[in-house]
Image (tube, rainbow over all chains, first blue to last red; front, side, top):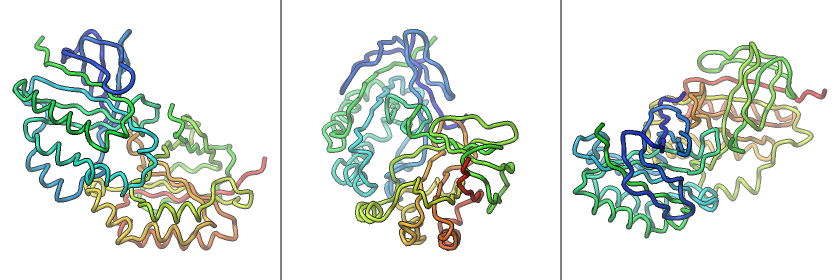
Length: 185
Length: 185
């Protein structure tokens, strides 16, 4: 098993309690009350779901951007970051048929994806998981996990609104928005 | 199962007979006499091996290059292309730590990877399979499958020699070279 594989398990127990769960584009996921983040493969519990993704090399970031990212970003697991969001998305076949220069142009030059994310650092930490090249056909192409303090939820809404208004999002045909709070057992 | 998944199975039977099998960089694979190309997941036969990879979107090709590629390349399965080669490679962690612009610079601007491949079209057909982002940890990062007519084997040697002499190949730490001939049952 790759040590870069994560499974997000939605069910009736877990470390993160669901505050809200709604489809933004396309169909809903089965409603669940808790989500667990497992650093391994894991199966869906009865009535729930599991979404798998793998952390990988960056596909668009250039060196000067990387330096700025590394300087500003914070890791997951900060004690004050008791809110989280899981945003699974799938992109259209038209997106995947673009060449690298065309995808990069939409990603950054037209959509300012990096600029938007950078603006909300270090408050909002994130980890991207790729699903498209797993051996099993997955429902989504990407799973992004965000962590932030409750006081930064308005900033998180701004970040999502900016991305969703971008040219890049014209290529998204399935998106679910799951908000969570850390569950102290 | 993703319909982009392929398994190369080395064993004692299969559609392609092994003419030679040798490590070019790093350890050898268990010697086998035949290879099968399965468009699905498949397990290793006893004493043999299975290598899995997934076809995916292109990571470096730009639009003008893509147009030239599409205009020149031929598909797999040409009757005259009775020779094949399977070249599994792994790249170092230093490669994967490069940013996109740096990898592209090595790939094309310094290594002329695309130019080298283009020079041997349409004689040498190829399909690239990615292994790095499969859920299971795989021994290699890429599996490239080539098909060509026996008369083009010298051209194929030239192509490999040019790639292996390139800056990009300084990042390859495991490479095996398996030559095959179609086996008429």
